[in-house]
Image (cartoon, rainbow, N blue to C red; front, side):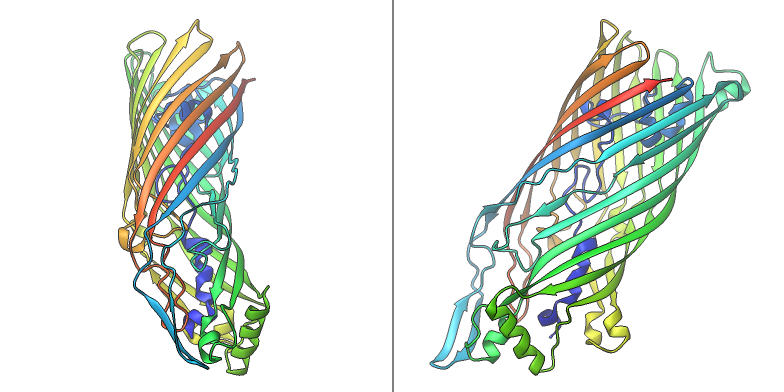
Length: 469
């Protein structure tokens, strides 16, 4: 009766992370200048967002600088159903054998339109005489969500999925070139930081209760319930970086961030809004399968280790051309184990403690961006990025309709004497195919696989204000 009770699906809150921009469930757009250049910023200095892209480069910033901004994200997700499978659902009714088709992908539909607005806040302070710089960053590297209509083909896989993380990241950078007296000829800095991470997650999905229809001989028709789950977690990690530059010629950067273990704990609530759903709940309770109003559970998610490296050409006045390579080691996301308090206290089946295979692999992003300063106050930016997906075909999930992505970017702004305002736009396009058994259910509760093609078009508009104090 594991699928009947469906407690194990609580893990989708944490493991079926929502669609993001940098492959898997990672968001890499944390500054308007970077967004306009397809995130090619690792090899560049001169902006407080270096706290995220390459904290070693903050040694090139003078005095106290503050930066804050927001990225508006509007994704459009379309599901093109593959067509009816040959699976059927059978049970003995009062008039004999009843046979119904199982909906594994019959109705094409658009996901609900949902607006997201991750923030980015940075501060840097330089003690140039001592070759030291300090920085702080707050942003949301893992986030966004997917929202489907309640009656869609994959309603038993997920209807609402959202995750949000807040990374607090203080860093310290050391200007080695300054300390050893060769900065006029060659710039070299290193940095180290600590990451304190707080994350929240939520999921809604329907629960297939057609086992009650079969066992009641068709007296209970098309019963279903709904599970709503919320959870949160705290994790810790570190980051390190290096920045080097031959002045007015070429610069290089390398930045890495450790993986972060997130021990999520949450509460699952069970709702039965229809008469048939409530009847199925009562029927199953009489048979020994009891749905509580709520239960708690835990699952640990290991957010991946990742690094970015980049090179920039500075040999033409007012022009910067940057190339970045970004790698995310999602291979740490091989499986998830869920443990429930009701199992520990003996009030529910031990089968609810479940391990789900994911078997993700590493993915990468390649970005090329350019910035030209017109009249010394008007930046013009353009960029293109290509992103691979870490999700294997056998575990592709509509809660995360991923795919190989193309990023097309433009940006501009206005730079004053002590302040600047930047804006960046990104169009992200990707498509993925689901042709697997995720959502297959079983003979008693067949659920639905929602196989088909998932196409995503995401519009990102970033706005960032910077002040040098």
